[in-house]
Image (cartoon, rainbow, N blue to C red):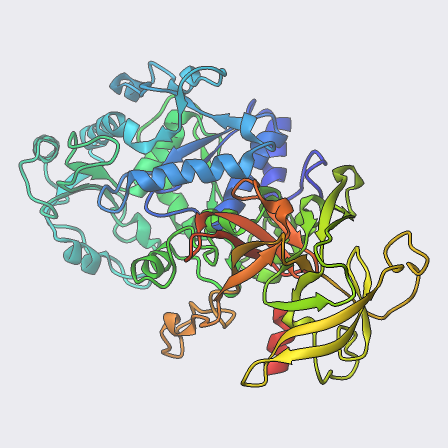
Length: 598
């Protein structure tokens, strides 16, 4: 189903539709809650498209919430990149469905007793200074919610070390052991927790745990941690706090505070749903509670999706950064030239399911080609140049030829191509000794130059090693469009650029970062980094592009005719020249190459 259609169909949307029809919900609020400990990747794009797509289709809103409860791993750089990625992905599609809060607006402790509805204060008016939600904005309210659990006898301060907690938690087939501190009095727990907040104890010395069920078959229900001590500065709250809530506690309460109706996450959180519900019910909250739903995460071939592994690639210099065009990050794909619409189309095609599966990256590349074919202007670029001299073309003459900008969109108009006596063609478009069915330029044979003339190879010039460095040709002056022999048939057509007018660029040819389908699979003892593709980047420093690309904005994508799609980078090349990154080839050549090599 295309973006123009009103609604996709999947089990989550069916649940929401039924909830509205049956009156269980009167409005829909979803959320996308990334932890700012890395850049977003294509898996996050699936979640963004799902949550904002639901808000778009059901006239609801979706909140961006930074799940920033771990100051040791989080950074403002990641917060900024997340916001930029989401805005880019949603531009023109669902940006009006973003729920944002007023700057400085945070829930107050009296919310604990349900006296105020923070979500009622959410502002969506244009022209007001707005920012995303932050879990850290709720630290004060979360602290008071924790106090409420202690006063109800449902939480206690535990002095066990993290290692002791893990050991005593048991296993799915083995009951856990109760902490010796589980039965502290309410008064002692309150005193210790307040002192934890006041910074009296070192990191790791105490935690606050929920008093649930140490014999539960669900290990996550065995007295999960609520708070830990971390004397670390927080990117958003500074040094105000030295205790930080754990995900399972902060997430469900944040959903409640914001009025989230459907909390949608990936399948690994199925086992967390019970504790999600337990916290909300244990607090005896007055308003309607959110509910968690799970869907299958995105697994993509020839890459890794773990933030830990992606960070390792960056830190070890295997890539140039989080936005390296080989990375599966949204920033990397944007820099590579993937249109936002292609990521949305990809997410639409893979759908939403309950079972894990692996998607071939060729489907993503297909979606990129599908979108760029409609929008990218065509130009001619020679990546590996071979000089051609047309001996019977007048010296010093330059003429203008007309070329179509995009045959898929004639409203894009035409452009002028400058043609002269000396041109560059691709090295692969000439062979002294051609293989069978080679229909390009060879000695004594003719070929048509795209938008120009028919030329015939007369002779070659070689260097001392016998390599062809220059080809001499003649041309048929009547073979140009509109000329007497314009319709004369020759078997091959090649592209070219004028030596005099072409602009030198550095071109970076990107390929798949890994050379196996599942590099994360280490079941055979192989380290995942050993599968890095040594040919994932080739840099061409002497490529020539027609001058119509001059002045294009960074990020603009062109189709280099016969060569592929290329995006103009904001960075400069090794010699200070402009850089084009290959976005994707014109067709899927990887599968064919892999089959040939197998």
